[in-house]
Length: 111
Length: 114
Image 1 (cartoon, rainbow over the protein chains, first blue to last red):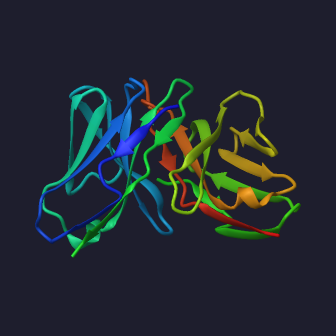
Image 2 (tube, each protein chain N blue to C red; image 1 turned 180 degrees about the vertical axis):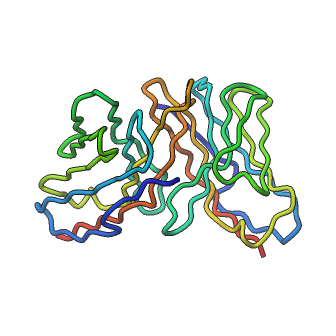
Image 3 (cartoon, helix red, strand yellow; image 1 turned 90 degrees about the vertical axis):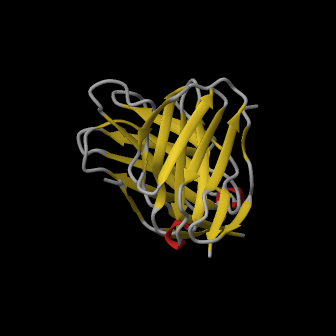
């Protein structure tokens, strides 16, 4: 079974802190994605990566950056966390039939 | 621009049917459907490709009308296990590869009661 894991299920940070969210997949997938999920807004794409060190902005990249140094690991970085970044963050990787496999999510609260 | 799903919420009794619609303002290459149960990650149900056939997953089927840029998810004889939030994800034409990038709708909450 494909496994996508995320470093934390719950995270509480203070405004202005630098925050790292990590995602690891074990199926050698090329493409990986970071979404945020908010009630009534569905899943919105923040960034995606189609190869090591290759990344592209999604629909809502402002305030975020990403890093992909190894194929299995895709990190989302909040350079200076703000309260409006309180959300559920989901990572996904793309399988061979174009299905996305999602991790369990990280619920981030910024105080 | 996000596709629009309707209805926003559906309440059913076991055995009843439901239809969830997904409508886009852009030309679509494919439509994907996912289900997310409470507290869990979204799980892939099916993909519908332009020019492809209607798909099925257990008693759930879906169709894709390319001309209208719409897809519908049909849940037949619903079971308690169908409860959750259903998302459509649309893949447009990017002039090259889209890398599997999806734009998701806002979700439809389906509740099935005994």
